[in-house]
Image (tube, rainbow over all chains, first blue to last red):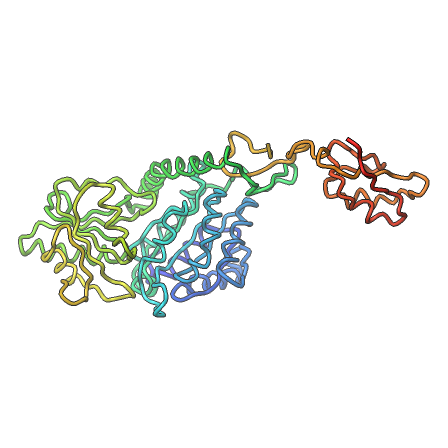
Length: 370
Length: 86
């Protein structure tokens, strides 16, 4: 069925139809509409879940960890400061191999206090063992929730998945969505080590130097295995529902001399910039990473690369630029743009590409740059 | 040693006897029950943090650490803690 909804509403509808056993969440702008809508679904009987109204994000993730350990399908949503408050527990969720699904509505970190889009919140969860996907349209946000549950709960993966969508520029934007009947696309949840009173276990037990590294290796191995599970899930989704997703989304890349790499809604904006540049005779393309963890293999050989980071690692540089450089041994032009919700238009992106200084870094809007 | 199994994907333990070894070797004082004073209430076995006192008051000295909680909790003062000669 076609309808017009916001990114937040689309996420809530998808979660409802994925039928989680437990939703535990704490409201925070710009995510609030997701959990508010889910709370309404539970109270009106449209969703037969336990909704746990917790006192903090740390507790929200802890409640999801408990419910997931008990064998339930769990969901939470947060943003920015709330995600940071969860951080101890996000590490626990991944280390305990619990397939929790979270929507993170990307928002700037304080100070200064700022509710608009930025990716640094998600980047600070980069090394926790969560799978991270960044979406660029309301339809993609909706579809990715179904795939996230299936991927997380797959017995080759058993890791949590964070679905990232840009605050306001996607969470509060209305776009048309073609809804689906998921049917058996997400198989019934079956976790190998869930709580069983007949076979008691202690979880997160003290683990000595002789065992700990092995669990980290298992996690690293499952993260590598997740690539094939993501691909299999995305192709099954395309077969059943007719919409195709990859680890990345490429736009006019195959014959491009210069490629702009980005995450989230900036990647859609970049596609318009590419059309403008092509009309000027510049052979440009756009490569939007959907999956950031696991980090996809990219083929950038022989191309000039411009990377837009809506995040920053102080004393180092843009996190995405750094990732591209280290995985591909290419020189990039690193543009830091969109921090704190700074407006970045397709004309601006076309400018980044026209004025590229490969090997350099520029901050959009700062004197003497771009 | 805590019941972690080779195929486990995450850290978890399973109940096993004496996962920390023979903790009885830690003991300095040994509990001795006076069966004349004892009224068989079973409070000692409920309070024992290592679950080494059976319902019929047999103390498993292989694991009893000699903490003295049983003697402290006994309402009849029927358990004495005696320094052990080794």
